[in-house]
View 1: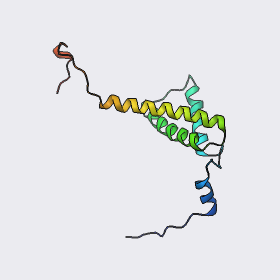
View 2: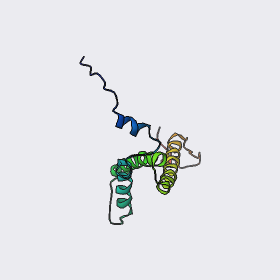
View 3: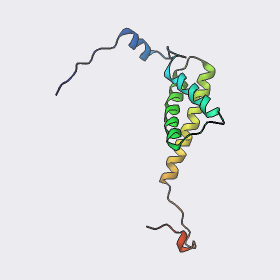
View 4: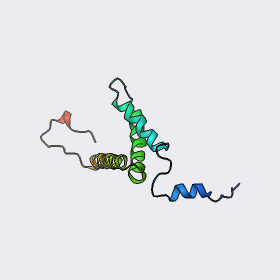
Length: 116
């Protein structure tokens, strides 16, 4: 097996990774992702497939998580924290709904009952 030797981090990489705030803001990909999707989702003429919306939700989720933790702009950081909290609650509700037992009343007509 061909194993590559890992190189150490450069001083610049160490500085970026260990900084409490994002040193690349607003040129970072989190800012670009948030602005990109904010513009698209605000456009009433824009249409999306379910797959596009699911992919967007994942990108937005990680972008607002990062911005909420590392953004140097206090207003943007507060906005990102709120959005991250909302997305996290939404994900938890979806997960709970998927795992919740379904209620099937015994009085439901046979054709409405789920086939097992």
